[in-house]
Length: 213
Ligand code: PRP
Image 1 (cartoon, protein in one colour):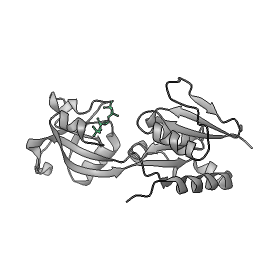
Image 2 (tube, helix red, strand yellow; image 1 turned 180 degrees about the vertical axis):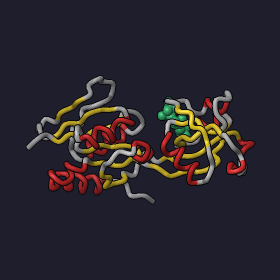
Image 3 (tube, rainbow, N blue to C red; image 1 turned 45 degrees about the horizontal axis):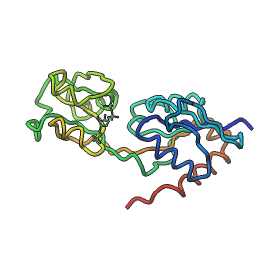
Image 4 (cartoon, rainbow, N blue to C red; image 1 turned 135 degrees about the vertical axis):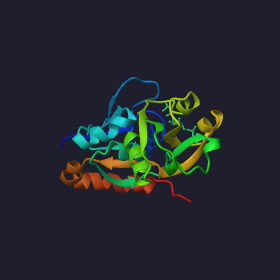
């Protein structure tokens, strides 16, 4: 049988993702200062690959990975057609609209031409459209909190975990768009063609998810 490929995201979700698979008995030899992007298990039936978080849904949709771990924010933003059988109970955060405290309670439907800085173009556009607010999206690649501080945008849409980045930059949450956490995503063909193998692994992962209180 062809080797099973599991894609793990660089960044904040890497450590809990590696721990999850190690908890299931995999060696999962990735990360930890190494620059190796592929780690094959000694059993030879599974390999882990390390990709940029935003690219995980792409690897999984195309079947280059049978499954992967990605934030729900990233999965929704990607619009990729993948099967999402399981939320993993770690990597909790919130996708929010944030801005200067002075804008708290403001009805943005009355504003026109608001500029929104974000990495989440699709989710930001859909959110403001659903509110009947027309906005201009400014796509950035990081340090989004900077944009309203220096006049690049009026507001931002980004994920908030501890709230520290907003706080230290004098910004506040104005509206919540959605709660997010890490999710397991599976290639749709793999899910059908390798059903037994995939279901077994999904069930084992499910048994290892921390119970949410
Ligand atoms: C993310 C996000 C916020 C921050 C939120 O950025 O874009 O900036 O974390 O976390 P907090 O609420 O715990 O402060 P990341 O560190 O991934 O870097 P980036 O700004 O380069 O995207």
